[in-house]
Length: 116
Image (cartoon, rainbow, N blue to C red):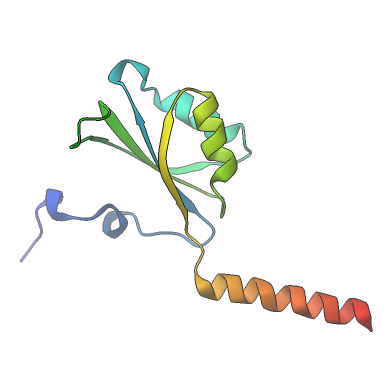
Protein backbone atom coordinates (compact mmCIF):
# COMPACT_ATOMS: atom_id res chain seq x y z
CA UNK A 1 0.00 0.00 0.00
CA UNK A 2 1.51 3.34 -1.00
CA UNK A 3 1.45 6.35 1.29
CA UNK A 4 -0.25 9.59 0.44
CA UNK A 5 2.30 12.44 0.27
CA UNK A 6 0.73 14.17 3.28
CA UNK A 7 1.26 11.12 5.49
CA UNK A 8 5.05 11.21 5.14
CA UNK A 9 7.09 12.68 7.95
CA UNK A 10 9.74 15.23 6.91
CA UNK A 11 12.50 13.06 8.39
CA UNK A 12 11.19 10.12 6.39
CA UNK A 13 11.40 12.08 3.12
CA UNK A 14 14.70 13.78 3.96
CA UNK A 15 16.58 11.61 6.45
CA UNK A 16 19.14 13.28 8.70
CA UNK A 17 22.64 13.30 7.33
CA UNK A 18 25.71 12.77 9.46
CA UNK A 19 27.09 16.16 10.44
CA UNK A 20 23.93 18.13 9.66
CA UNK A 21 21.53 20.30 11.65
CA UNK A 22 17.83 20.88 11.31
CA UNK A 23 16.20 24.30 11.90
CA UNK A 24 12.56 25.38 11.89
CA UNK A 25 11.90 29.06 11.21
CA UNK A 26 8.71 31.07 11.01
CA UNK A 27 7.85 34.25 9.12
CA UNK A 28 5.12 36.23 7.39
CA UNK A 29 4.47 35.56 3.69
CA UNK A 30 5.73 39.01 2.76
CA UNK A 31 9.03 38.39 4.59
CA UNK A 32 9.73 34.97 3.07
CA UNK A 33 12.65 34.77 0.66
CA UNK A 34 14.53 31.57 -0.05
CA UNK A 35 17.52 33.58 -1.23
CA UNK A 36 17.61 35.56 2.06
CA UNK A 37 17.48 32.31 4.02
CA UNK A 38 20.31 30.87 1.90
CA UNK A 39 22.32 34.09 2.35
CA UNK A 40 21.87 33.93 6.14
CA UNK A 41 23.07 30.31 6.12
CA UNK A 42 26.02 31.07 3.82
CA UNK A 43 27.08 33.98 6.05
CA UNK A 44 28.09 31.28 8.54
CA UNK A 45 30.10 29.32 5.95
CA UNK A 46 27.39 26.67 5.82
CA UNK A 47 25.25 25.31 3.00
CA UNK A 48 21.54 24.62 2.91
CA UNK A 49 20.85 20.96 2.13
CA UNK A 50 17.03 21.08 2.23
CA UNK A 51 14.38 23.78 2.32
CA UNK A 52 10.76 22.80 2.89
CA UNK A 53 8.08 25.45 3.22
CA UNK A 54 4.77 24.65 4.88
CA UNK A 55 1.75 26.31 6.36
CA UNK A 56 1.68 26.87 10.12
CA UNK A 57 -1.27 24.95 11.54
CA UNK A 58 -1.09 26.93 14.80
CA UNK A 59 -1.51 30.19 12.84
CA UNK A 60 1.30 31.93 14.76
CA UNK A 61 3.19 32.43 11.49
CA UNK A 62 2.07 32.59 7.87
CA UNK A 63 4.80 30.17 6.80
CA UNK A 64 7.18 27.73 8.40
CA UNK A 65 10.46 26.88 6.72
CA UNK A 66 12.15 23.64 7.65
CA UNK A 67 15.82 23.75 6.67
CA UNK A 68 18.72 21.35 6.97
CA UNK A 69 22.29 22.63 6.89
CA UNK A 70 25.68 20.94 6.62
CA UNK A 71 26.88 21.88 10.10
CA UNK A 72 26.68 19.81 13.28
CA UNK A 73 25.76 22.82 15.37
CA UNK A 74 23.04 25.13 14.11
CA UNK A 75 23.52 27.84 16.75
CA UNK A 76 25.52 30.25 14.57
CA UNK A 77 23.08 29.82 11.68
CA UNK A 78 20.13 30.36 14.03
CA UNK A 79 21.65 33.67 15.17
CA UNK A 80 22.29 34.68 11.56
CA UNK A 81 18.69 33.88 10.57
CA UNK A 82 17.44 36.01 13.46
CA UNK A 83 19.63 38.91 12.27
CA UNK A 84 17.91 38.57 8.88
CA UNK A 85 14.52 38.93 10.60
CA UNK A 86 13.39 35.29 10.77
CA UNK A 87 12.08 33.71 13.96
CA UNK A 88 13.96 30.52 14.79
CA UNK A 89 11.42 28.25 16.43
CA UNK A 90 13.73 25.30 17.04
CA UNK A 91 16.92 23.69 15.93
CA UNK A 92 18.53 20.34 16.53
CA UNK A 93 21.70 18.60 15.56
CA UNK A 94 21.97 15.58 13.33
CA UNK A 95 24.82 14.13 15.33
CA UNK A 96 24.24 10.85 17.01
CA UNK A 97 25.62 9.39 20.21
CA UNK A 98 28.00 7.28 18.15
CA UNK A 99 29.40 10.45 16.54
CA UNK A 100 29.84 12.03 19.97
CA UNK A 101 31.56 8.95 21.36
CA UNK A 102 33.79 8.69 18.27
CA UNK A 103 34.81 12.32 18.69
CA UNK A 104 35.48 11.79 22.39
CA UNK A 105 37.59 8.72 21.61
CA UNK A 106 39.68 10.72 19.12
CA UNK A 107 40.22 13.53 21.63
CA UNK A 108 41.28 10.99 24.26
CA UNK A 109 43.74 9.41 21.81
CA UNK A 110 45.19 12.83 20.97
CA UNK A 111 45.61 13.69 24.64
CA UNK A 112 47.26 10.33 25.24
CA UNK A 113 49.65 10.95 22.35
CA UNK A 114 50.51 14.44 23.65
CA UNK A 115 51.29 13.06 27.11
CA UNK A 116 53.81 10.51 25.77
